[in-house]
Length: 154
Image 1 (cartoon, rainbow, N blue to C red):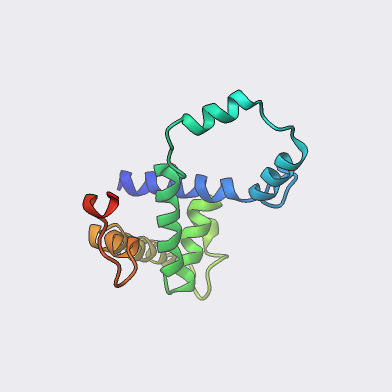
Image 2: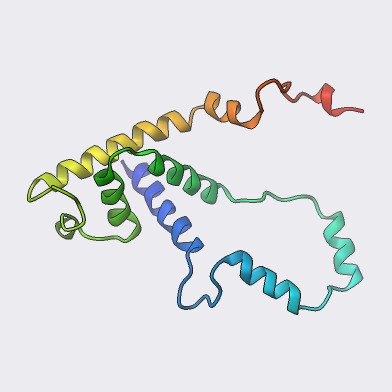
């Protein structure tokens, strides 16, 4: 259960980092980067050469990727109350006793049952998404050969 809670905290950080806030004057991070690139000076030639020689790094971190996987699993939840309960519990960090106001048709002690059902449903979807076969099947288009070292050689 500690692993699940850690993934939910990571999900909150990834989702909250992508949203605009009062500190961020732009509507999205790409807009901030675009404005910065348009208004900045060109880097020195030595820096450009160093950037070309430097080995490639990953585009996203493992935490961001896991947060996006949890977000995709959350979007696959079918029930409105499941999605709402998890969003308000983990993203907005609303206490369970105030959560019942956000749920439809749920009152009193049934809130804990909705939260438990939502967690179980999310865990089931995450187990399906985290499988090696699922990841492997989404990296190649149908009909394309599986990449091997022989195909990469000229």
